[in-house]
Length: 394
Ligand code: PMP
Image (cartoon, rainbow, N blue to C red; front, side, top):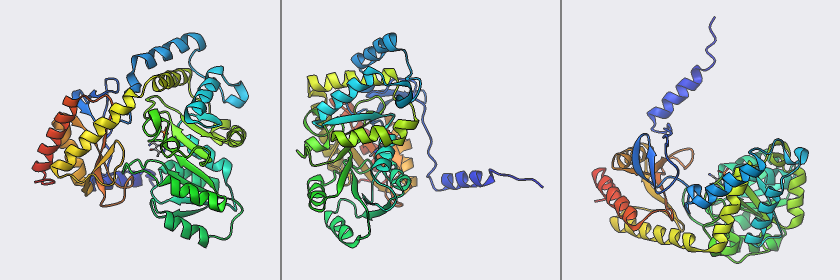
């Protein structure tokens, strides 16, 4: 008897391909920047989260090199066992100051920062109120925490109030929301949510992955954007997007940050960011504190691109940030659009189910401070050409 243990996977992959949902991962042979060499072709980049161009900034690269000369490469074990490098502590102090928080702790990624925080703050018998469109890392963190999860309608404080009123069995409670929603580019109504959290004495956590380095004064994030310092208990961020490196951060009151160092499982059981990561992030902090020029340019570029797309007749959804969804509906159309754009020299990824709901496939266009005015005009021209060809605009 033969046991074909993986036949089901082949069937699943074939089905994904049939539905236009199979992800083709392109190969880059250049640094991240406005222009990339992708699959051997030079193309204009609208796919990465390198909002400020830090991923290949000469000062950031140089800082990583110098730190490696002094400290080597790896942290060699988890921080609670091998000890923590002063470099990691320096980054955490700088991040806390930058964000106007009492303290901060870093993780390997934004994903592990969410897992660590949710698991440490709530558990069995507790309840989490979670925006229906929250990021996968929040969803997984909620599941791992073993708390009961009550989803409220997207960006809907009234529904949040209703769900809080209906949920009477609990030990402790926590509200969690993305700051900027990564597939739509809309911003959570954090002042209303913070007022609800405060009124009911509920812990409030925001995942500001796409707001870090983008929102607020000089990129200080969503809490700064809304002037809510001291009113949000936990601000999670990532150092892999606007910071252009890799890593996660949690900022908030010292007592919570101390607790994450004791009970955040990815902190306790997984090694920290490497030396070049930390040094590169410190150089990004220097750049952000020296000037708001890159953040300002990012927003100018995004506004110009959005206006151009809307004038052409594209549906750019509910975006309020440099993330621009180009709503297309069915996944095969989104994939075809992305493929044709690529042939025209523009790299913008199609996003389909399960990352977004069925029937809400789109291109996700990521603006960046690295684009020149000529780059943006070229992109608008190519979008217009492909949009007309595929009957998306007239
Ligand atoms: N939260 C949100 C909202 C995100 O968009 C992402 C990245 N896709 C993450 C968390 C995870 O961040 P990282 O890539 O640093 O793990």
